[in-house]
Image (tube, rainbow, N blue to C red; front, side, top):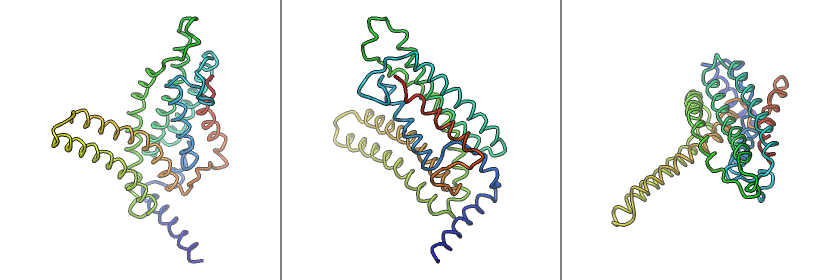
Amino acid sequence: MMMNLLQTNLLSIRSDALQQDIPQQELHCYSLPFGALGFISHVLTYYTIACLWFGRKPLWPFKSISNSKFDLVLGFIGISLCIIMSIVTMIKCKNTWQLLVIAVWKLSMSLLNGLTALHVAILYLNRPEEERYLPIKSKQTAWWIVLYIPGMIAGMIGLMSLVVKVAARVPELLAITIAFYSVIGASLVVGILSMIIICYLGGGAPGKVAGTGFLVTVILFVVLSAFYSDWCLGIMLDNLIGTPSSDSSGFYWTYFVAKRLAMFSL
């Protein structure tokens, strides 16, 4: 009984803290995956992109991609649907700039996923006929991540604006925020300490060590920030699983499936 009362009070505090600045109905304008489902979606997206970078079939990574025309169609359909649905979410959230830029962030992730799939398919189509049985070298498609970075930065700014409003009054949100930045900070500290130790011992190349440490920190931030956003939104919207409301479930699952189409690259 006491536990139920405590949970109810915590939910009330969380909701009231956020509604001081943003009405609850505006928070629910966000219809893209978040929470556990958003986390799963991002894991699958990262996996798909990694497979495509190495020219591997996401559903069977032991084999190289070979059916570029089919992949081209899948990539086009997937990216088109994700763009349209992300824009619709932006329009719905136009009065809440934080959620709008988070939707921009998710759009940039969809673009990274879809454009990578399209690029790999085009690379395969442009190969000479006699080379099409060879593994495709598609690592150059990793440059599409440059398109993702600005959207991620904008989204993180919006997310942190929301987090700052309620973190002090929502222990779960504060805990996950501390954990996220602790991991990023630890990576940076390890890089700096490694550089100092190498300089002290007078061996190696401290500049390279520092550069590597910084790069690892940036990669961790880029990768983990998407997961962090999923759980933050789940906590703030009192929906850790991330299940959509009945009136937006069709929209939600269409987006979820559209983003998965690149996984079926053959």
